[in-house]
Length: 378
Length: 262
Image (spheres, rainbow over the protein chains, first blue to last red):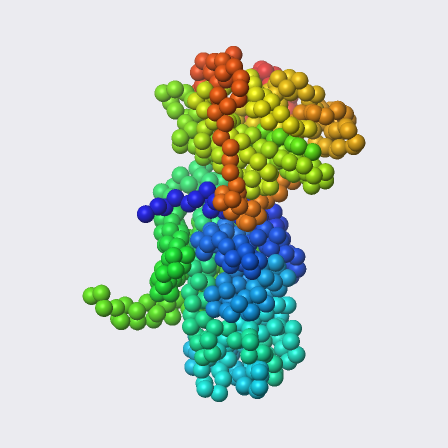
């Protein structure tokens, strides 16, 4: 068991840190104010070769590992900006297309996600569904060599931006299939972005498909197996999301340490007081546990192991743990932490997202609990 | 244009500790980074190569772990990396370091320009660049903030105490650069992977340099450290001056003069 990161991984972390300081931190206030990411940011990620990191070079990626992706994501997440979500989504969806897609689909859809010319979307959720595949109402009607898609998808990241998306719909057999949909196609419209508590600029929209024609060549994976694709993607997404949480948790501690060292109470810095020392110590221990478990599940993904249950258990642990870290950080900052002038305010709002998005923490309990119930080990 | 860049691994200043028994830097417990100005040095070389073509070789002298800074240089885009690593180089002061680097550069033989950072983060002597120019018998353009190549000449804008001056030299030449010369590029993830997986670092030992090894390391170093200590800062007392502003200001000036600060 080797807990040391390779030189390559450490240098990627350093490069991600420099990238965050140069390209993201200076525009975070503008992103908050305008609720939109800069148009050139995706291209900057592409130039830094941070998109499609897990897909082979022949498709425009770099053939790196899930571990390296989450190390980069953890570092970028310290900005508490939705920018990292855009980077992560293009990575996870390119990987999903590579894993499930035919050679034709790989060639047509992956390169543009790696070179930053297209934004990826994953479209499962609908107004009346959560994570239940049986409740999906989007339909796919087979007509000759294509399908006609109709229905509404909700909370779709980048649904309003150029590119392609993986859309889940039921055909006449009532089974869910994943279709690659070009977002600039006829019959494709969208709502204005939802205004979110945090993650300004993420761009969650509702998408309306009215008689959208999709070639049968655009079926991702096997017909009727769409939910398998979703479950595997979301398991990988959870690891990335927990890397974001770890990075933001670390930034909560960094900001708290800085504040507590400078803030004098009765002529002593807050760090000299046992109560605050204990809070800082608990934050540190919590973050370390989250970090190494996240790395371990990413290594399982790289090894080709089934990581779906482990990533659910990971989320079950990391979300409340880092939310408690953020709560302590806010307490350490006192009233200052409740002001927008302090980064902890944005971190606190951003950290709140993880228990809800990409499936709720409660659902992870069901996934892990039912897996334990089925287990024959005991 | 063939460029040689000299770079150094230095202790991370956020992670320094001292060996109290020897009074020296405890390198085992210290994180190491690429000397910050050396990133600017590499960027200057990369920019010149983009403008005029050519080949960039980076050289560093240090223990095996100094390979990391050469990997970083490879990630930024240099063509070849050489590490001078041998016990015979250990304990070198700036003169012995410059001598060893000059031997390596003479061995490479083919070059138009040598670029060094104006100083290292740890030693802060600023000796190596000028000494290296002397060993190689090259014109030296130090503390450059801009570099331009025109025909067969190199022109630099040199920062001096009260302004700038423009200097010109013929090739081959040695240039030292400061931090404000450029904004170093960030290596891409792909280039970092290639730096570790596709590229090699040449390791040169003392005997590879075809030179008198007496000039290397401790033997070749006229500078000997007697001792190293951490200055102790003692907590002082504060005196608060009260009264009319002109009176307290005069008193403040007197106190500062008494302490030799004015």
